[in-house]
Length: 237
Image (tube, rainbow, N blue to C red; front, side):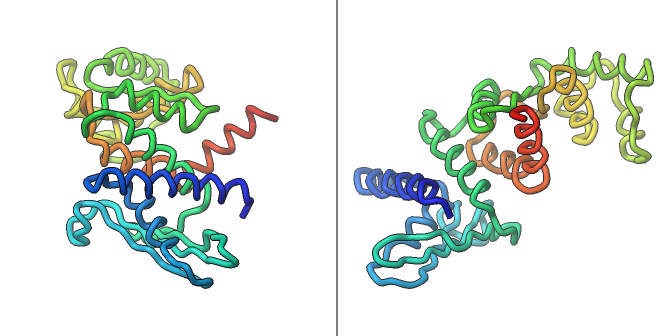
């Protein structure tokens, strides 16, 4: 691993350690906490840290991580990180993105994040990609645009019975939060794509911080992250 990357991770962990000492009630993101636990050793060799959210109760946790760090001659190297809720191994890119987002969320007062702030956070974390967040307050232009695209046969719908039934169930006065999730995703993707953006659908104007992290992981770790990184690379080439 690049020494600069590891240096950035250790700087984040130092921040967490200092803040924890200053405020006993401070609860860092469980990924950061697991990493801090993994570096609490004075002996060379491998050390593991495991942390959950939800008061460290495994049965109620929505996020859980195991981290293995190697200590050699007083320096640490990140060996392995597993998302225990999914069983997925996280890459260093995944880790850096989650850490960056969690630190930005820390700076927001309270436990709730407005949709405009969610968009700002996504734009900041993925600096070369722009996002469009559609919610109950701004979905109508996206809905009408998608309807026009359908009428002009400019949208190809997958052969999915749920999608067809979902589309037929939508009325003019149907609330955004009552749209089937697949339909919302189709509408938002089409709406955002016209401006070369990535569309995000949410069913309320605000979202708890833990759900922001969960949404972030759902959309931007793994295959979808690879698509976005490919898009970033194509812009630079």
